[in-house]
Structures are given as C-alpha cells and as structure tokens.
Length: 152
Image 1 (cartoon, helix red, strand yellow):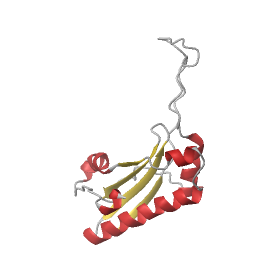
Image 2 (tube, rainbow, N blue to C red):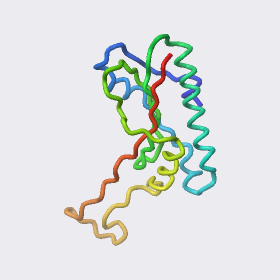
Image 3 (cartoon, rainbow, N blue to C red):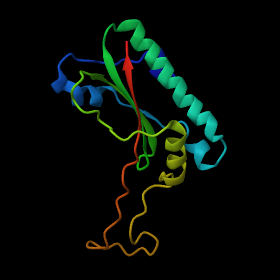
C-alpha cells in the first residue's frame, strides 16, 4: 500500500539514466506468496490487486508529471519469489525493456505454477552428499512480464 500512498519514485530526462531509474524504482511484492503457495487466494484477486497498483501509479504519474511517458512493468520473479513492479521514463525511440508482454492472468498463473516457494533445490541436499563439482543445476528461464506504456 505504501507504493501507492508514497511512491518515492525518481525520474530523469536523460535517456542514458534508464537503468539507474529502474534500480531506484523497482519494488518487490512478497505479500501473496503464502496465500498462493497454500492456494488460499483466488487467481482473480491477485490479478485485480496488480491492476489496482497499475491504476494507482498511473493516477499518481498523471497528477505530478505532464507530457511525459513511462514504462510500467510487473514481472514475476520465481527465484526470489516475488512480483516486481517498476516504472521508468520512456523517451521514445529506444526499445522497451521487456518486449514480450503477457496479460496479468497469464503472469499470475505462471508464477503460481513455477515459483520456488520452498527455496531453490540444490543437488545433494537430500542425500547430504555435497559435491564441489556436481551436476549443473538447471537455471529457470525468466518469465515474460506485463508491460504498458503510460502517457501523462
């Protein structure tokens, strides 16, 4: 909720500062993990909550910034696990940070199915035989995110 009441976002007019904006403006949302893990929250409630965050940030940006464009992204980071929300300036011309975008319901469903709620499995953990040179652990591919261009 603090994300909507006091967003504390920083923006630049310099296109070369987009990565710094991203690092400053990223927020992690862990609050759904326990409920999703135990299947105690309907899929639609999480989707509606993410839409509420999107609408709230869009209202904030429209109130305080004029004639500016922003890229709003929500990603499902299955390794943390958490949803990440970020807003950065969009200066036109440059490619968007996440060119492949999915709808919120696809994002939440994929997160629910793939997130490492119990932690990342390590080889040899079950047997107690830790090897310095063990088999390669398969690194999961990052999930596509929800992305939207906002104009004020």
